[in-house]
Length: 310
Ligand code: GLN
Image 1 (cartoon, rainbow, N blue to C red):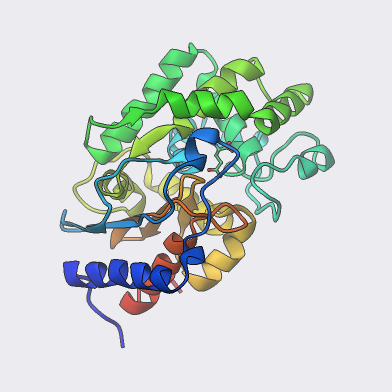
Image 2: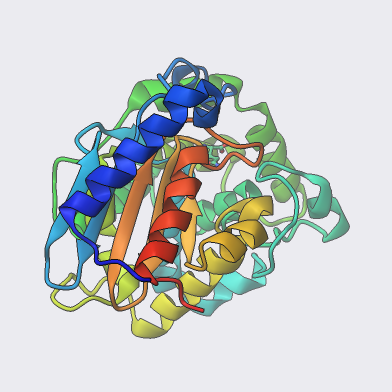
């Protein structure tokens, strides 16, 4: 039997997550350890916010704690890049799931420097490079943060520079990817410049309330800022469904049945077309780098409310 969404429903979901963890603390998973600033975040945190068609936002748990959105930023940069360079982006980036980890270099050699999709790191680095061309890194970053603030209709959204510096200090794989792309002529700017913007976009911090609000344009809700053309909303949702969770995308589609983007900060942005936008955060990750309890909650919510698109 399908249930109705309510504040009580979300409070119960949060209580159930904590009850599961009380039985077995391993259910939280472990925070990303390759970015030192994220490694020491307490995994025992959970938040959920749902922004609805009528403008209402329902939240439960740690929904006022800002977290590092990391790869969820790729949804925003792709939105801006598609607006800027249009379909020419697809000459540089593919639209197929990779089946490999998000930071893998393997297919990049086989496919001659064209990343499989814009959500794996290589594809996101090319997308950011497209945004950067013709601009100083500061201008590109300012465009990204303004887009996110406009989407959320909230100016109190900022970049955590310590997290960006921490990722830069240990970002050897992204450095390798950027140099590899450049060697194939698929990076217009110097790797350090493009990566500088990329690390800062990943270090944007938002609460689940802000992220749920920022996702409304992808759910085509009424009365929200029209940031991109409807045809692009369709493309973005398709890519989120097929590639949004890296090599965990098929499993996520199977379990949840909704377009979504994850980040190694433990955030999840889930889109329910024409109904709402859901942000979930729990910093412990599974082996693909996706939030463990976040995925659990997304699956339960989509089943309980009958919100999957299939
Ligand atoms: N900034 C992270 C990285 O490049 C983003 C990865 C992610 O969230 N999956 O590794």
